[in-house]
Amino acid sequence: MSRESILESAAQVIRQKGFHGASMADIAEAVPLKKASLYHHFSSKQEILLELLDRALIMVTNRMAVVMGENMPADEKLLHAMRSYLHTLSEQGDLVSVLLLEHRSLDNEYISRHLPNRDRFESMWRVLIQQGVDEGIFECADVAMTVRGLMGVMNWTITWYRPGGKLNIDDISDQFANLFMNGLKKH
Image (tube, rainbow, N blue to C red):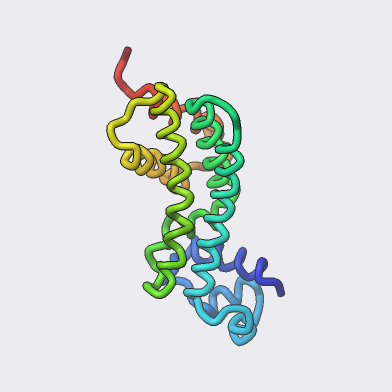
C-alpha cells in the first residue's frame, strides 16, 4: 500500500467525518489496512493531516505560479487565477476540504511548518492584486483585506458547488471576477 493511497483515503475520511471525528482505525479501514500497518507509514493522525495540508498547498501554489508567470494584464491574470483555483477546488474536493476546513486542527508543533506554505500561496494573490493596482486597473484601499475577501468567497464554494449544477466552474469564476472587479453598484 502506497502513502499516496493512504493519503487519498485519509482525505476522504477526514472530509466526511472531520479531523476530530476521524480515527486512525477509520483511515486504516478505508485503505484497507490493519491499523498497525497504518502506523508503519504514519506515526500519527497529525502527521497525516500535515502531509495532506502540505500536498494541497503545493498543488495550489504550483498552479498559481503558472498563472503568475503569464504575461498579461492583471485583470486577465486574476480571472485565470480564479479559474485555476476554482477548478482545483472542484477537482480535488477531498484534499482541499481538508486544507480549508481542518487546518485549525493542526497541533502547535506542526503549525510553524504549515504557515510558511500557506503564507507563500496567499502572498501570490497579494502580488497579483498589487500588480493590478500598480497598472491602474484595480483600486483597493487594502490589498491584504481584498485578498482575504476574495479567498473567502472562492473557498466557500466547496460547501455548495456541485458538478452538473446550473453553473460550471468557469461561469462561477467569471461571476466572482466580475463582482470583485466591477462591484455590485450600477455604473
